[in-house]
Amino acid sequence: MPYKNCQHILEDGHKCNRTFKVPTHRSSRKLCPEHERKDTSKGAGIRKIQGKQEKMREFLDDLYTWKIEAIDRRIDKVMEQQRTLDSKLDRIIDNMEKLDENFTNMKNLNSKVAQSIYHRGPEHFDKLQKQIITLNNKIIKISDENDKRNK
Ligand SMILES: [Zn+2]
Image (cartoon, rainbow, N blue to C red; front, side, top):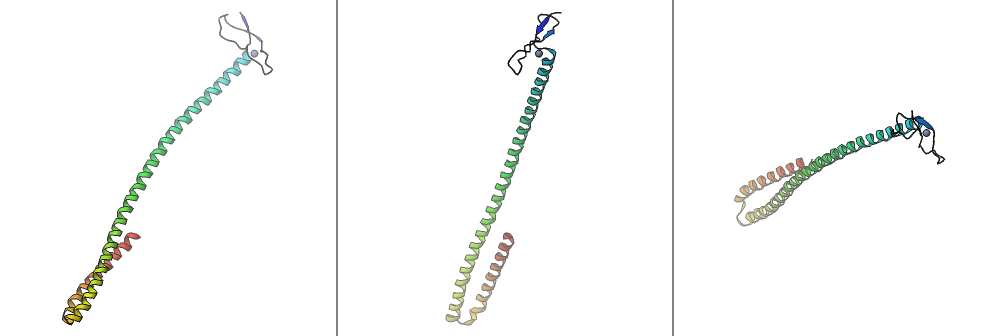
């Protein structure tokens, strides 16, 4: 059986140079049994780390994808809420405008009532008074709706 010398470089920089048996001269073995074992286990360690790194990369990919999807969903939700809020705000502004309009109408009506009473006498008062009450009820209703929506 042929022999080879170990090619392993020791910490002091010298070759191990230990002789070991090989099956043939063409054997690719370059290390003595001791260093061969160490090299193999080192290689296995590297493969293990590489495997772990690969798993980690896959995990991060999944995590990233999951996060993006989650963030997308969150953005969608926020945008949906924003749209809801916008339309809510639109309705509130709309109602506020109606409220303003009704207040203006009421003020006008009040002055009309005053004018009517002054110019036409009290016979028109009841009719105008009813209109004021109707308007007033509308304002209260709109105001209540606004309160409910703002809750
Ligand atoms: Zn050796």
